[in-house]
Image (tube, rainbow, N blue to C red):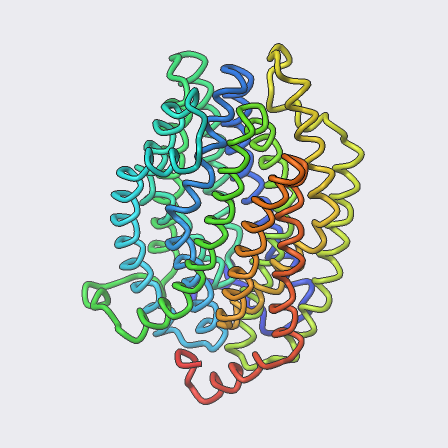
Amino acid sequence: MPSASRTRDMTSGGPLRHILLFMLPILLGSLFQRFYNVADAIVVGQAMGSAELAAIGATGPATFFLLSIAMGLTHAFSIVTAQYFGAKNERMVKTTLVSGIYITAACSLLFTATGLLAARPLLTLLNTPAEILENSVLYLRICIAGTAFQLSYNGAASVLRAVGDSKTPLYFLIFSCILNVAIDLLFVLCFGMGLAGVAYATVFSQFLAAFLSAFYIFSRYRIFRLARTDFRPDRSSLAHVLKIGLPLGLQSLLVSVADMAIVSVVNSFGTNVLAAYTAYKRIQEFAMLSYNAIAQATSVFAGQNLGARQPARIREGFKKIALVNIAIALLIVLGIFLSKDSLLRIFISPSDPQIEQIAAIAVEMLRIYAPFYPVLCMILLYNNVLRGMGEVSIPLFSSLLELAVKIGLSFGLAALYGATGLWFAAPLSWVVAMIPSLWLYHSGRWQRRAAAFAKGEGAKA
């Protein structure tokens, strides 16, 4: 198997210790990834103004929508690889990597072409304010042009994490984040390139992260060194990845549709509300870092132990990490309420004439969303542990339910209570959407998949 100095076999030893140690590099990596997203917002908001900040914010849901299917597929690489790694099946670990390469290449071509053509119609459909539409289209097109780099890094990082190496993707990401911030400042402050400079800096940083990760995989790990004959497509492996990845991608797509619906309603309230929403989303991204890192680590833990046919160990690890997860969520809620509007003002220049109105709107949003963060952290945990074991149908149904409730409440509450009513739509949809995944996990029906691996039928489970 790959080098023991980097991999982590989570099928023996203390479950909580494994999950937390594996989670820390993922958390730090996510922190740096968010940092360079936030750096874009800070550079733009401070150097250009709230209108340009709103222009970046308007592209977020569109980008997520265009890449959602592909991101679900790259997540599937991690799930399938982790299962075969736990089962000590070296041949299928290698075959899954090759399948991942083909799927990543196909997705990169498809979604880059689609994104470049659909950027303006999509942003227009989202009711992007006319005064920021051109800047939003420019920013989105440049970022979408780097789709291949983003998906390649995500795929490489997923494969490394599946075999227990969560540190190496972190190192490459830190390097690219620092470089991104430096190029941001150079392009915007020195060369005056505006939003285009911010977008070009992001694409170049993603390219470096993807290149370094791929080079490391093929040079460091013997199991991933591919000969020409290895590139023959394996239909069963492709089918296994697609069977898990397409529902994951569809689930991400549904989430993105719900986000676009909300942004469409947000846009109808004007640029100030959109700028406040953009600033809030940046803060929520940081708040969710620990939830996502714990969920990803637990997903790999569940996948490896499913392959090793240890369902009792999965239950033990989940129970312990759930308590940690909720405790972290409560601390984040407390921190948000104590910070008042100090965090929000980081994203807006003090000289901006709209700063007080924007800050007031964003504070209201934070205080409505934050109390529901314990629910959000648990729905992520339930869905990821189920996905790690290949259970994708119920998490998909959960997303459908969230989509329906979120869109319905967004339009209904906004019509009745204005922007204040709109902010309640997402939190209430989290509560409803958690119910199916909670039921499936505690019913124990997922244990049949461990039995399937015992019979050598992992790909058919």
